[in-house]
Image (cartoon, rainbow, N blue to C red):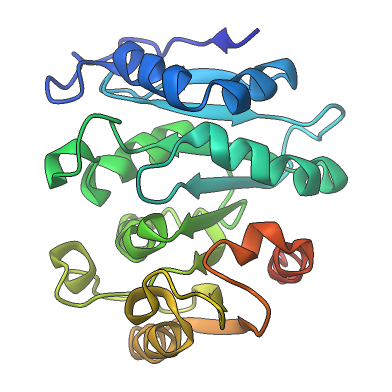
Length: 255
């Protein structure tokens, strides 16, 4: 049973989404099994402060109150429940928490059917209130990865520095995307990049060459790429599907 938590003084729902309850129902319709498994594991639904969508929040049994939290951005046409399912085993093993943002409204493929980075970050910032600098890990998969650079840039601009590690999973930094182009500095931020050699889905955006180009771009912004996982057996989803990749990435979290 999923528990719903309400924010204090929520803002009016964003009309283009129909509100977080409508988004949750779309998630329930398309990812019912994973949503039910997340609920059975103790995951909770937390509406975003503007009421447009929701987080799926999971804390493993026995986790410390200040345990690291993975903030995960799902991929194209995907759901926070998918991220919760794929992260659960490894986070249970470590006693780390998860905050998966449902940033797609589930009702189309235009830009307005997604939260933009400048809308994602205030919701993440509020959800992480009280988290120490470096106490969180930002993960983005595919389209979520493509948006993670701007989210990290906003974290740096605010001075919050919540993210002690950022994981860019099969989604390159595209400088013709305005939110990415607006990133001024990521100086001192730490990154792990993933690319699957067998990623034939959209290699120009997510394959090894695209992620190598991203590594160069990150360095130009002052970021530190600690690890570039180029998995010879991995495909587009190989970061989650091959546990050694996930473990190698999380092992670089040092805070």
